[in-house]
Length: 430
Image (cartoon, helix red, strand yellow):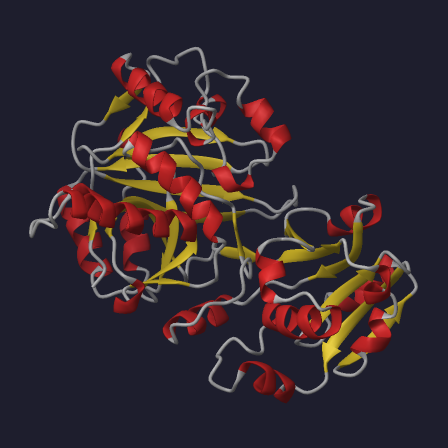
């Protein structure tokens, strides 16, 4: 059973920062902030990146001191009562006119081992990031960023409760970020509504959509703290972690693809790619990227776009016979037919010789989120030899994978928009 509970959150004091807008203080999650964005965000001395990305020669000691100081000075204030927090994001993709609206809630969720099948991962992770987050958690003793989870509620009962409580008296703050997404947060402290949400959430399985590293970090930290306390019978704060939870049936929930960019291979391994791919794929070659995209938008299932920069060729590869994936991964692998598995286990390994360890270490593969212009990157970035243009992984496949306790390859999904950091903070000492 998924155990959800309210908590007394901390957030920036709008009274203290009356001459600033909240967007100057908050930031995207740590793992999508590039150096250019970091420099811009850090221009404000009170932006949350000074804590979430605050590692220096002292480790995270300065970040922890900064958080404590801001709370003591009233720059970050504590709410008066345990609450859930309604979080709405109104957004569009790449400034397109059509907008979507996604609503969820922020609460505490009891940590559970994956083996219990209450909270489940959906893709593989890269362990080095988990260790980095563990250091920050040890130093600050706080959840500074939210894990993003989804659940299945076909009745939309929780969504209805959230909509009913989007009241002016509950409003905490609203801001528009640099991508045009409007973020709105309301405080939900009505005990009846909270109890109803907890009741409806109780029988559900949670899928980690984003933040696998943060969840696994919290599990490691929980184990450390329990060991220090001789594993008490009663619950402790480290048993819970802050999460944003969204109904997988919410019409605003969107998963974009993550494209793959290959670099650093010996040129003979790259040249003639389309000829070698013909063994297992139907190959189509196009005159230019425009002709490629016209076909790719409505191409058959199990089709991957490819740009060979070495040979300046745009093409697609479509798997001829799905049974080859049965041979490679086994018929028991529920993910064997999804595009990222076909790419990683057939194209990367068999055709290009990039094994799983090389992919994890990013020795030869970089990843590009689906909000970026892949054509522009393919054309302008000279270090890339092959660019693989992916389609989004269907959410039904994500749910099916989780129900079978299996994980997709890393970065099989890119849930958009991200849940931002610095909106609500949870101190474990409370």
